[in-house]
Length: 307
Figure 1 (cartoon, rainbow, N blue to C red):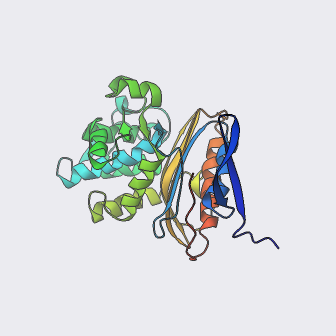
Figure 2 (cartoon, rainbow, N blue to C red):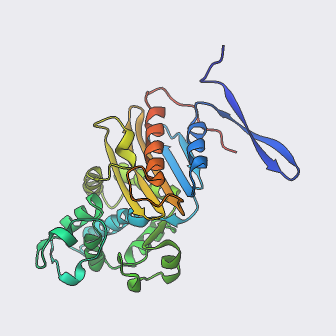
């Protein structure tokens, strides 16, 4: 009788003129479950997963710089809270919305707030994370400076995580070449998961700031990606991004076997539809579901074997 928990799948790689066995992967491992999803996607993919209690992990192209789309708003938030901790900005400072501030795309300020509306910087950050508000993002960047996020990320050990410009304002780019390649921001799946882990452990800026940032991310309203196939009430603190050819998501999913940091980055996607079942959205949702189901119990998992 086959034992599913111990059955091994032999993976092969073509080297030169012959096929060489390189690794045996347990059929119940994260690798065996996630690799088929990744390989079926028509586009570029990077994925990183880490259980923050057990350390079990999976990576796929996790060190490859990729487009962030609005996912870069997570590091921008970190920089805003860092500057607040050093009294360089005041989260309670009132910001006045001007007509010239309004830009297209996601969010609510452009279409639902009148010129002259005022609100604290803290609320602009909340709108930036929860509703991925592009106008709010630019208001935050105006306060902290466009280049400051990249400088802080590099100093903290995240050299590939950079905000390049204001949203829909390519002329403001402080990294013109990267803007051409990646748009408003760039990162790697591995760096995103490490940032999520630091946030969970309340090591970003301060315990108080980390707790506040987690609350913003727990309120993220994107239901098409990580939360879509998870059980109702599952706690997810996350941020996402969407462009025609790119869908991204990173955050912390609470599972029965502990919190799990997850990042899915896609680009050059064949499916460019703006619908719930877009292939990029679906990959993010499917990865989240596989990860949650994999960590359904508290039983210590076997470590994945990597090639």
